[in-house]
Image (tube, rainbow, N blue to C red):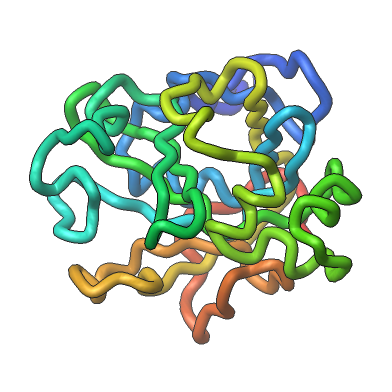
Length: 221
């Protein structure tokens, strides 16, 4: 008798539209370096607006580039809580950035969502961003939060409850890795992950190896 495939942690049957099964908070209760590449190809919606995650960066609490490196503050407190919650902060006093808290409570590790391929609510995204080019709507962490309507009001919200929806990828994807962007500490860590060949990245990846074992069921865009 054929064996059933191992069940991915934190995946339940979808309750709304999406490419795959609904992700639950337990999906994020793992090593941030496991969660980050697994998010490539997942669908991320806020009030029904969003698309496919094509680029992320991982930040571990032992990482000098992480907001949590020097301990808890009012700004980063959400990072020190349980996994599966949104951490939203203002970057350079200009735009919001959204992160997904990972690992056990107190670990204070998170994944920054850097780029999304718009698939739902595109007209609303264009209105919010004042742009027509779909490739430019969510090709950066500040761009995607503006397009998707993410603000400080979403800080601390559960990732498996309204208005946020997350669905596992259902496509066969190839994930590439490289160094993170726009930081001055721990710049050598290859903790930026992206969908190979995507036109919606914030910045192209240099030629690099596909992350081992990060293939899913069907091919991504």
